[in-house]
Image 1 (cartoon, rainbow, N blue to C red):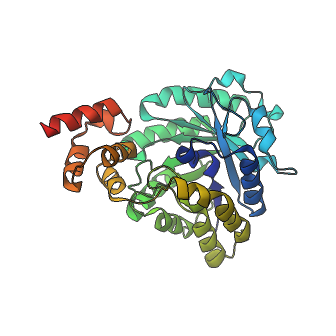
Image 2: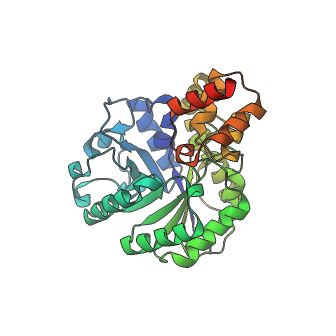
Length: 334
């Protein structure tokens, strides 16, 4: 049974490129065009306690998001993300008073129990919740099974497998899907968030579209792959694949207009995409910001860069620490 949905997260994950400064009118236009394209879910940005302004897709309250909602938009399509520890959820109204479709909660492995506690509170408030633990490569099978037990008890709307370093290949994508599909409650959707460090996001997503599953499968995308580092799965590519292979009814023209009018000017100014340093970060299981720092601030050969990234201890690999990488680089150069 074909049950694939698309979740465009350009205004949230793409915001790492331009500090979420899309401009209010452009944000409104992008949301409107994505809705016209029949995209199933659209993530409008972050709920955040950071200082912000009306031009950024960082929102201090849900009410601030209403200003960029297109008229006559179905609220169940629109999502916001919260980072564990970076937003006071006591500020959130009950879901019945919030004109959004749901929330996505992100947390790192060391925040697991805190994240689950916050998730419980969000569900009690009535929100449709996506649970998004980052860096799936940090979990072994037994740890995933324990996590699945927690998620089954929690009963969120969706669980997201987040390939933060972009290293998942087709075999491991399928293994992870099967592990969760066999053990997760059937009424919980499985979502995948791919990064493109090894240029595998498109092939992995196409693999998921071929699975014969009754479970809802949701795939994250961004317009033109917009995202920090190597970027993400391209909305336009996956839409075209689904329309061609499965006769879905996504409208490609508003997507192309979105890219041409609003995304390409950002790309021209601050490009993203596959590079050898980002490949090396994925190969060595490291946060992509390490590769970014080394490529921009050193003259290391790729062999030296790979050796240095490999030497980063596990506790630092997925939590970027600029002071540490400077120290490690300095010791290597002695």
